[in-house]
Each structure stands twice: as structure tokens, then as C-alpha cells.
View 1: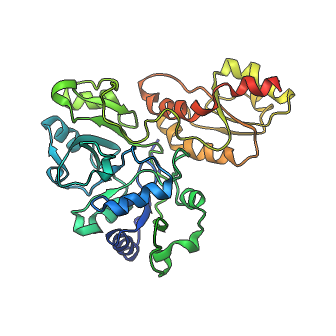
View 2: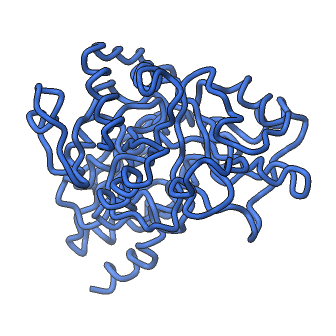
Length: 361
């Protein structure tokens, strides 16, 4: 599901954002996956501000974003030929490569590990920022621009909502100075993120011993990776590097979330309705008989790309409905839906048993 091209940022705003990064400040910017909370990847104090602003555990690494044509050898100590092939095939785009970190790169971005995640995004605003920052030779460390564990933002307004800002708080956006300490100094506008879920992460740092390992599924599938390098990525093993967005509980709104098949929904929704539970319903093929029992609803496209594009916005919108439960119709299974199902599995993890609990009251 191809979305309209995002607008390119004003050069003056890009220059202002790059200056904030060079001074050690934080800038939120759009990528094709989700909006990122960026800092100078080579400035440990700036990277620490990301962790403080998000409330992010310090053992959870962040991804370094680089401009098109960036020198991978600057960031990594070893780049297997297979990794170069993947970068050539999918960059700029939603693929993160885990490689051996160069000794000159601070371990603040890798949570003390000897590996580093690197990605070149395709969003035009992200590219413009990365090309302006340090003349295109720097790297911007950026996890998603939200409080840790919350639903990732796919619009600039989502970012402002997360950090209690409005459009007038954007520091340099309105000619003001960058905020100090851990504060987010600027939010660059870039429309809705085209992909809508985070990048695919593949570990290439242990290629000789473990082959490629798929640490986080996303828009780029394991089969697409195999088509380029002739090896299908394996599932994560216990010794795999820690990577962004791979904790069991993640991507969660404040309202409890549960998943159920269409058949289970037909049985569960009327019972919850009879108990007076307000249910916000998200699905891809919701019959009228089900939606009659919902307090709010959102129907997403039945194709994986369209579903991914709308998923986080749907979770955020349903979180604002005053419902006691967000109930998601289980999406289709299969390789094309792996990224969507991964995010939903983590979203519901912290609400295990919620349906039974609500029905007992």
C-alpha cells in the first residue's frame, strides 16, 4: 500500500536541526518506519539524553542512522560481503544491520556490546538531516520518539503528545534556542511514516559462526534477505546481540490490549458488552454483528503493508476512546504478516489474562 510522498523539510529547518544535534541536543525526525528521537551517535552525553528522555533502560541499544553513501567501515570493524550486498539492495530503506562496532565508536549506542546497529533511512526529511549533520559524515542515534515501551509514533503530533509538547514548543522551529538537559528541542515534520512499523533487524556480526539472524521482523522479509545473500536468516539464539524493540513487552498503549480470532470475538464481545466493559475494536474484516458491541472501532486494510501503515495510529486513537479494553482481531498468519504479528504480540504481552479478569467482575 503505497502512501503519498512525505514533504521535504525547509532547508532552514534542516540546518537548525543539524545544529542542535551538533550541540548535543535532541531532535525528533521522521523516517519511513516511525519517527525517531535523534542525538549525535558519537557524543555519549547526547546519547544519554535519549535514554533520560525516553526512560529507556541503559542495556537496550539504539540504532545509528547514516546518510546514503556513508562509509560503513567508519562505524564497524568488519563488514562481511553479504552485509554490503544487503545495504546495496535495501538502503536507503527499512533494514538495520547489526555489525561489529568499530573501537572508535562509543559503546553508548550499543549498550556496552561489541556490535552496533546501522541503518540508512529513505524518508526525504531524514536523508536531508543526515546529509546536513556533520556534512553527511555523522551518525544519528535514534530509537523511536516515544516514552519507552509505548506505541511508536508515526506522525509529528504523536511525538508531541508523547512529550507533552505543542507546535509552539519546538525550540529552533520557531527561532528559539535548543532546550537544555534531556528535553526534546525540535520536532521535524514529515507527514505519516510510510511503512508504519520499525525496521527489520538482521544480525550480520556473527556470520561465520551463526549465519544471518533475524532479530526483529519488519517490512523487509526474511525471504527478501535470502534472495540477496543466498542464506535464510535464522531465528534469534540466546547469544544473539541485544537489539532495539525486542523485549517481550513493548509497543503498548495505556489501555490493556488483547487479541482474539474472529470466532472468539463473536463469543467474547457480547459477554464483555453485557458486563458493561467498553471495548475498542481493531480488525481487518469486522462484520456488523461484531461492531454493534464495540464502543469504538477501526478497520485496517487486509493487506500486511496497509495494516502496518495504520496499526500504531489505530492503537493510539483507540487508546483515547475511554475504553476499558482494546481488542484486536488476530491478523492473518504467514511470512508477510510476521512484522505486524510481532508488534501485536509484544503489545498484548503485559495484558495477559485481561479478558478473563474483566468477565469475572
